[in-house]
Image (cartoon, rainbow, N blue to C red; front, side, top):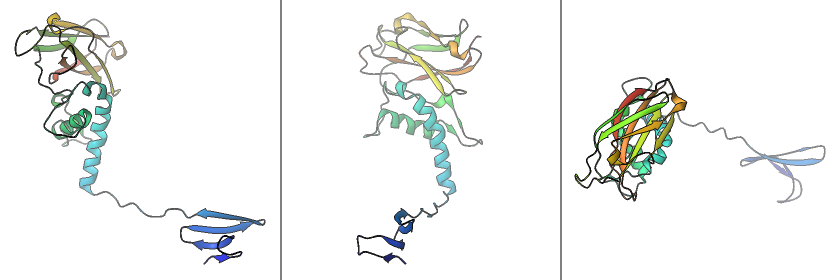
Length: 214
């Protein structure tokens, strides 16, 4: 119980609600009580969802600049990032293993109506480089010669991405991505094509895991 010494605005000792009053060497002190409320332990289902979110969230945050190029689906009122995150969580997570793992081949980083090139591949090139190749299909289904090739390489060990859309156009048929910082490492690779004016993008294609030449 608190004891008031000088009315409602004066000092007091003891507990009142969530605060406690005390004095020491003729000085009065008020402090709040610690929050001792226990947070309930998450259910198994809640923990599963949290584990999914943590794993895929870390990956997708790394990819956010790529995803911003465009991710269009039927879900309205969501950002491109949230759409891509939702798709990946539903379609690209293997929950049969402990810990969970991402199926990189099932990830979509961009999703759009613009056509891809044909025969997309990624192979180790010179030391610190990845060679991307494709068949130029300019003129087919709206594909244009000046579409920008977006080259993407992701390092699972470092949770880092390197990408460029300034190296080559669709008509080039080949392009090199410099990844000197990943020499000797395994990278997951993707390609997508962006209209020259940025108004549309193709759906990304997984071009496989490669080991960068050291």
